[in-house]
Amino acid sequence: MEDVSVSFETTLLVKDSCLCLHVQRAARALARRFDLALRPVGLTNNQFSLLMALNRPEPPTMAPVSALLALDRTTLTAALKVLERRGLVTVTPDLADRRSRLLALTPAGRTVLANALPIWKSTHEALEASLPEGNADRLRQDLAALA
Image (cartoon, rainbow, N blue to C red):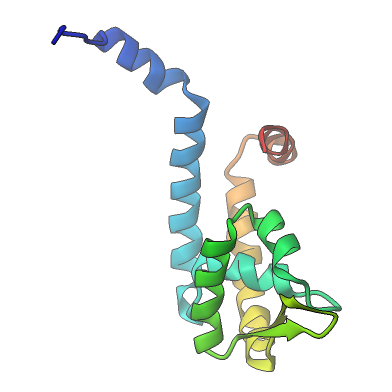
């Protein structure tokens, strides 16, 4: 077998320039920050995002929620089961299409979400304030362009 290697200089180049690595590191740091902040209401940042995605006038089906959160159906189903066991969401058959499921917040889910929102707001405001002036909107635009 031929000895194939990548130079350490190349490793450093990738470390310093790889957009995927930088976004992953930032996402993990943000996730930890919001997980810690939301802990008093018993939510993770992913659960908060999922509850927010379900906070609609009419219960959505899985497809639009999956698309909004960029989750595959299996991952979304697993996340919903946790919240369903806690009594925060319901998953019921869609009477118009028995193959589809309607996802809805329960009254307990609405309460937890309402309690979490001020925590999210203050954490988010602090995060935006830590960015160079005016860069929060630019960051959102750049990330949207990548997604």
